[in-house]
Length: 209
Figure 1 (spheres, helix red, strand yellow):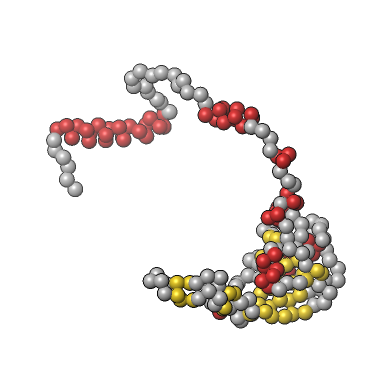
Figure 2: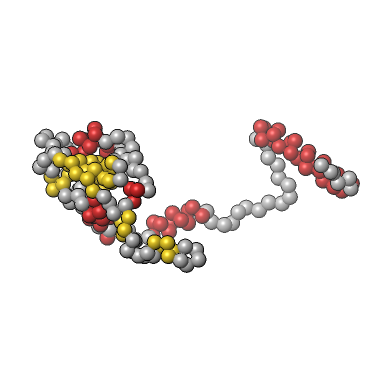
């Protein structure tokens, strides 16, 4: 490490050192000082301006549809399981476009069909239920499992039970060939096992179908 020995540089280093050494004492005492002339701030308070403009903005809440009408919250419907049974499916996927290498050569062509479960392992189960069977699902699902609802307000029910809940999407219903609920979906080897369960005494947790 070298030090500039020019007198001006040495004076500058000494001044900086003195200022740094003085900082703890000033902070501890809460003392402040003013150097030079000061003027009052003439600019308006930014937060006051924001609040004023927000108060003048039109209320759009009345134009918004109710949450139970939001399309993003509409779950896929399933019938109620009338028997307990287990079946397996292979969730084949077909490419809708070519997969190419960096040089343009095709690695996998459009229409290539494969089983994703040959390459990945799903640690979670999907527990798919009607809202009336939510209490059963909460007692059956493991902490890391996903609970999917076939109806109802998943957001409100999540807040009520203190656990994330999701809606069953139409594409998931179609992809897994789901027809009834409750059903527990888990990976077994290179296939998905669908365990459909007939509940004789549904326990309602939050209401719903």
